Length: 290
Image (cartoon, rainbow, N blue to C red):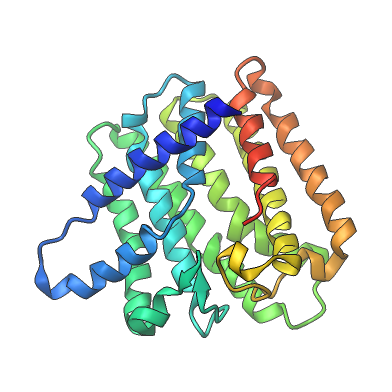
């Protein structure tokens, strides 16, 4: 546990340093836009997805230097999605990570452009990474594009917005959270595996781990959203429309979270003897309080 927590700190410091380098712009006309991006990008995110990226890299002997553009790209995509989700015409949240949401400070127009800017920057830094081959760049960018687009977060958010006021079947809720939450975890694991020349069998295991962990993570988020303290959570609560607790109740949701967590751990058996950090990551994420 202590070793992984140390990895969290190291990963966060490394990713924050490189994100700052990627976001250096000297154009004075863009000053407010870059401030808006930095406001959300450096607002205290835990950098969970980059850590997952680095853990997968360790499985295949890939150095962090070869994964850093992917790790930063994923944080840019994640941050962009949070900025967009908080907008009044989306989840209409006023607080994120204990601070006013981006649009509360910079306005909806600037916040929207900041989100779009982060998405496009994510692809740019991967495509310009000299550590990656052209084949690796192509595969990784395709994976990241899919996770954002109609078959990813955009599609998931649409279903969340347009169907959540109706009675929601489990299959609809599952669709929302595969595309809004689990898909980004899956893209991290698969992309890092691609860079590490993982076999198809190994990529499938990483996909299964990330999908099930992503679901368990989302259910825990819904439980915190239902019962949590907004100050402790650091964000507006009860804003998500599609919610496991609303559909299943708290006790059934807790059981379901454990089922998904168990499936995630089972998927790591492919890496037996090397899977301790993957298992520990899952346990840390599911024990969180914010």
